[in-house]
Length: 294
Image 1 (cartoon, rainbow, N blue to C red):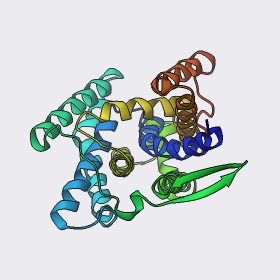
Image 2 (cartoon, rainbow, N blue to C red):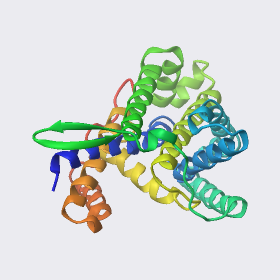
Image 3 (cartoon, rainbow, N blue to C red):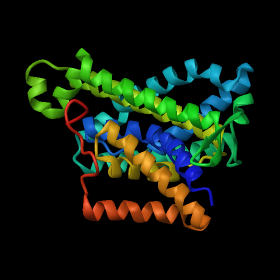
């Protein structure tokens, strides 16, 4: 059993979990919105990339400048039409609304694109790798996994700088800290929340693209993606961006290490860790603090 390889692969896989979870962490930390449809929106990003890549005859990477703005616009529209109204309906309304959105997305994808598993062609990057020797073990690392981890770092770092160093970030933090006071001093809360929702959906779509390049996906893949993303957010700390990265890496490590023992226990091990964190430290390893979210 190559434990060193399992650790390295776990860290890289955890980068994807963190990328998938950062939008969920953002919307909860700022808007107090638990988006049940977050995983389905990530799958929509994979399908949108597949459709654009096939229609335009372009490699997957060249479609990202089209996919991400479209995903951002969809997130803005969802907030203006659904999320914003649900947030005014009490704590249970957003859960019910986003659950209904999840069911609707799954059925629309099945009706329009069938339930057949699909994948995205990553080209030469899919098979490219590099051999590394560490602690006497030879490890083969996928460039696609490395790219996913670096993308997660770039996205989380960019979001942190956006919230910490820009005027928009100050508006977001003020709104998250005290919604009523922010309104009293003239902050237009609706555009702020709409922008946050757009960013969250765009990051989910980006995670969906990497999902499609590293594994197969279908209209029902969003449920499992949501579970792992939610667990990464809770383990790392609710609303904390860097905590989300730690949570994602922790899940990846647990999966890969459990697979070295017995593959059938990989998912169970993650869920047991999730319940252990809830029992011992329910606020997560690194609960949110300024300047990330309230």
